[in-house]
Length: 283
Length: 256
Image (tube, rainbow over all chains, first blue to last red; front, side, top):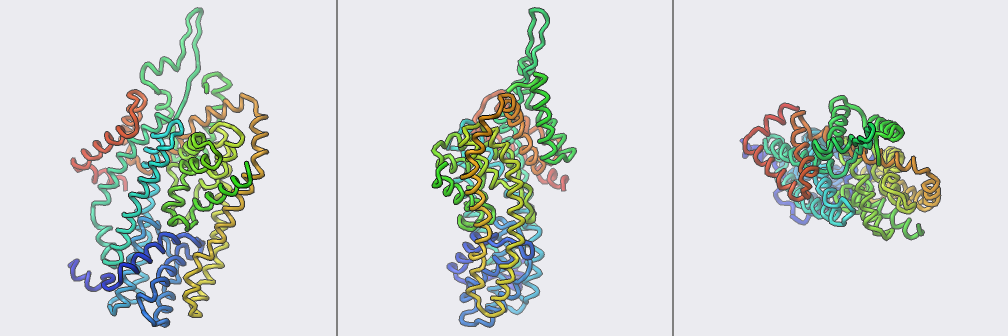
């Protein structure tokens, strides 16, 4: 069945690799360049198609214009992992230009609109929601005293993952056309990979919390000659126990009770001021 | 801060802003030099103290580590927070707690710039429509290049102006602070990373039981003092076991 569909709604067959590359770089560079309230990333789709218009409809300005006109609509997705969507759009446009009559103007736009939401969701949760924070956490762990290896690690790791991955997604979209979406959305691989990334993320975030957060209890209990530092006692139970307890409190407030970041920061400020003057907390 | 330094910082600030196309869009821009950790390194290089730059960048990074901008909304703008907060705190010779204290209001200012841009750029959208209608396709394709001017103006100018003219003011302010204020700010700054980490936990921690993984990571550092690379390898091992045992899919389903 997949084979049949590939015939009907498939992507580009004759489009040169050079043209696909040009469209890819175009999208990567300009996806958000004129971000706006009305069309969001719409103008970037027009730019991408306009720059390969001679490859799609050589010497036919009328058809080129028609193609661009049908993309004067709202478009918004996560631009990088979601780059498969502009890839699919280009694939469908190329297939249409190659004479595939199953692909109509309405079909292109309905597929485009149907896909942008799911890929915005997948992209946001996987890229800024999972991959980037995990790489950043590892990088932070490498530079507790400002070592340059931290940021360098992040730059190299991020680009080494993203450049091949986005090219793969985009060119796959171009070649498979509307079928590409089905393959990605329906496979269970995404869930498994996400889950594995989350597990790594949780361990790493726990580690970074321990290395970067401080909550020093300076309270000393004095009775005659006896002087007991409460912070030291907590540390003999487990090192940095006070930080872990604060982390649980913050988790409870922000994750379970849905406190906003601002409200939590305000609470921290109150704790800092009161703790300092009550000599419970020290620097 | 010299004028050349302020100009360079403003240039990188613009290139690392979310709507800047110059460094492969967000790939090497917003998501690379726009991450405060990397911004800190760049600012440190420009101001001649890489180590301090990275320390301050790391502090701001933790606060915004879980930042996602869903559907074009901008909860907090890390661009001004990093490219103005870090240089001002560095020039004033202040600690990272001052960079953090500056970052929060600056990120709100940046949000204004984002929404201002989205309104102004409506002009370019309609300009592009008109160019396509009139068959001027080459000019229509240049709109995302030309329209970048809005973002350039809204990023380059504020970053340059506030850094260049604000440095003296912030230095005086920091010097006039009583030591109590600095101490309290530091206690506050020491707790602040928790906010960023828990924003991230909202996304990756699907069940309370998952906190066990968080605790494992915590203990590996707090009690065993392990470095980051061994911890990641350990975490990959856990993830692989989980993947193999097949529990992974059911847990994700549960949360949706």
